[in-house]
Length: 119
Figure 1 (cartoon, rainbow, N blue to C red):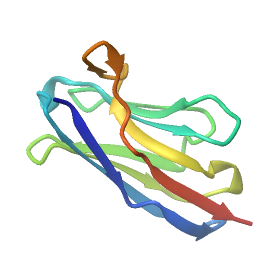
Figure 2: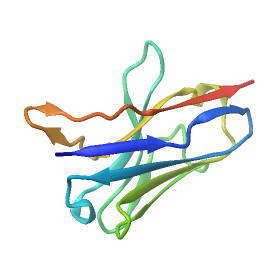
Figure 3: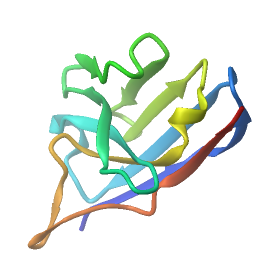
């Protein structure tokens, strides 16, 4: 079954950087488009960065120029390098397929990793 494990979150001051990692198992990783999503309290989950199976990337306007998504197909890992962090980047960050993967009859979501940016 699908398992995605996010790590690398933490507390950082505004202007700082973090690198998130996501380890995938239970899927044919190399053929899946992948993405990083985030959900802030009281807000809907949103896709902030996506990377296709061939390595093409796309970003939400709010993070463009500050975040970089990458992947290592051999290791089944997806990364999100986050620079120039802002308080509004505070959220729980999740990796998933783009679109999100199915686990049985429901969309799969892992535990996520918390990112808190202090002003």
